[in-house]
Image (cartoon, rainbow, N blue to C red; front, top):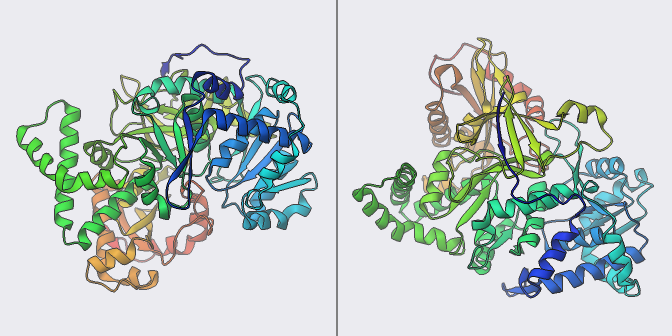
Length: 610
């Protein structure tokens, strides 16, 4: 096996729990602005470390007064907002811990997570969230208490806890050690019923302390590091970052509605972002179509090509004078406006959950926004590797974080060991035994390590397609390239035990009207009408052909069909982090897939409309 380990840079403290991170920040900089709350006028109200700590203690007293006991589990279903981190720490100070529930979860999913975890109370944000819980409440007799944020129940808890002594909170916050459970985070269920991943206090504490040093250029920005969270805080990635920001003293704002993201970015002015690749694709595609609408589409595309060439030359160590001059022109005409749209201060962005793609990595790098692509899973408390500000390789997901090790098994599977790795699954010894072996977590992902220990993801072990001709094909690489088209929302490559590779494609309902108008078509076309339009089909064909250019002929997509639907969380085809549920899609669209392989075979080496 090939192995690569990065030594920890902070001595482990097995007795520390997550509350120590807030206590440490309070001692270091009590008057630093730690959070910013949005105002109705579009501004932001600061919350200092001291103020946050006081609110945490007050809410913890409320939980104690309400009967919460050490070790109890509390479900939480809410959009991304300040109260997530407030409640998280307050519950830890009270000696209990949270079980997150995605705000998009169905009643059946709510019932499974609360029932399997054994949660005895639940916090919901809205009436809609309460309704979904209430529908399955009869199945959950152990859940005795429900609090609703939108009804002011957190304030009521604070008022009811004023008589709880400080000493009781201090006693409770010291009960948990590093090996105790800090949260149960249920997997997204893309390959079956969600499993409750145990995340310990040490997972949070040691990973935060080591990552803060590995990414000190990001989180310890001398200008004052800040980030605007918009990815769901129920997900392990945002949850870990929220804890890391408390530890590092990073100013954090929240914007759950992505429709208001750009105005919020311009008023909050973050220094770094956290997002999945689809967000970066969206920003690029929206910018391109906006330029097209203004008659400057050719200029934008030329600028983008120069940006990629410029970044590639920078990475190689030498930029020719002519290229520098061309880039300087486009920087003034195009890129300065993009930077301003993102608030004008963004220097770094951390991307995870799926491959970003070399083209986008170079494009943003040229803008002065260094996208640090990383890799991790729920079972690794989110990050296991990340590209470093001073040494990154576009196209890789970086080296192992301090205190983490990788090894590549004989079949190419990535295995991870380290301070970030979960001890296993809640109430599921069989799954734990299958995935955790001698301290190593078997990820199910395939990858390679270069001589510097930088990891490249090549596919998903269970998703490898084996054609009738015996060719192994990793669908993700093709899908990422097909999805780069502004008109395409998702693609799913198929072809297991079939004579050739094919693809299901869905159109981007949000981008479609602008794209149609820019191409002289009726912007009001329905998905059904658009999928039959020759111009739309030609654009999908172009994206498929571009993807095919990067693979061998045997791996290329020969046929595709455009579906008249979207893949969404509500339809059951996407996880909350917008990953496709491949097995569900293959089942639900089995007839469409079968139709791709009916009739005469296509010409070898080409793709064809279906």
